[in-house]
Length: 337
Image (cartoon, rainbow, N blue to C red):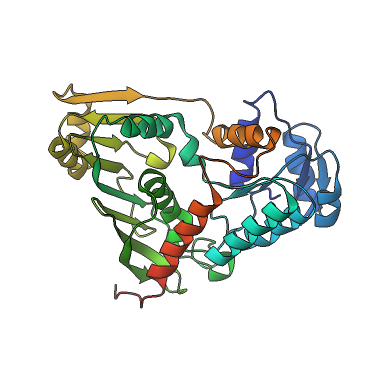
């Protein structure tokens, strides 16, 4: 469902999975649906939701429409008995995630948020090594994910009716990765800077755990370094830029060196230093073909074929928890520019 940019990237990556094919495409415009279907095989094109969801050739639905439509369309697909993979953010309110989870459980179908970064080979490698104790217990996580987007009329990034805002578009990535590593925080604080439309241009999050502190930020007001740092008791890790599509890991034998490398950023001298061998650092390249969306699709397919209602790597509980954190910060008055 949906024929925008992310839908096209997802469809391209499905071509890397021999066990998958596109059976049908839905758009509010039949011309767009037909054009999209023509690019990716012999899929049936629809501009009617009910007819699309009634198509028996469809074994699962990927929802890639604008943010504000995700929850409603997911519930319709679930009601039709179709397993769903729902593009991030899965919804604009944590209560809607709970509705999706309840409906999926009652109908006995699979539902998952398409937070694709969790499934990348580099992220899976980092998770496995951290759990195995490579850097010791986590003490701190820091990350910024920022891409400059000018506030222009009609921009989906700033339109509140379309679910715009930096937290929904970007903040969900670091928040979800942190919850994957540390679980729910015991305390949440932060701030946000409003755009002219009222959505957040920039958001900052501070999550507190019994033995760790997390500081995250995201925004449309600049191009950031877009790296994620994990400091442990006996080492550190940087998911190199852009960490939401991570293909390189830097492991440090000392957390202080990891912090220093993170704070140097990625420009100028930092880029030159990064190319040189460094004592106490091991770099791992974890490249992959395509855009990286195939790994979440592969996980969803495996879970659906196994008759599972959810995916252990991306449970709906985590999706709801991310939105609760965003809701906590957005409940506060915006800070002055």
